[in-house]
Image (cartoon, rainbow, N blue to C red; front, side, top):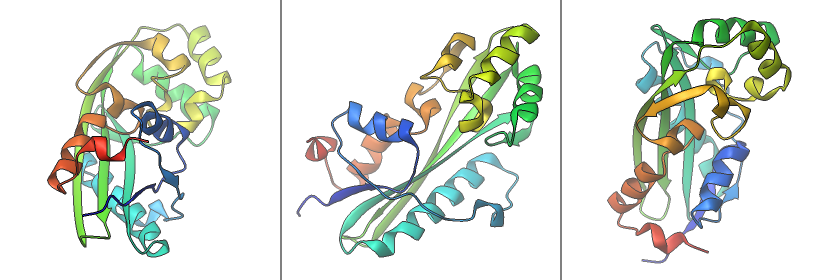
Length: 197
């Protein structure tokens, strides 16, 4: 069995950088899937459904490839949060998040066009946020970083200053669980090292 091209069905620079960090060269094809058509209140089910829809939207562009779709949300006090729509929402969110914890869910979908197989899984990581002053919240939101991220923070950026600890997979919080990816590839009978470039 030949090694197919690895396609990332996501515009997320953080996900692409994670793959690059572990030697996986990916073809980036951002999915134009309309997420608003999916209304699911259970976070793991929501992210896996969205990840699969994103991968399926991109798959017809390729004849033989491995397509990876991902989606992340933060579950906080029983409510699901994606990217904040504006600075006011980001500030309000951080006022709830600071001194609290949330569960970051990322859905992962792998479509192997060469084997006509699809694997869909989710990963959850608990994130504990620091106590923050209004000044710190406003300054962080003013960087613009929270507006680009599910959960209104980036663990690989300024946001790392305000995360006290995490329980679970670190890379999952950035948008793609590398250990889960390795296991999913193994389930499709690939070795992750097959994709090193």
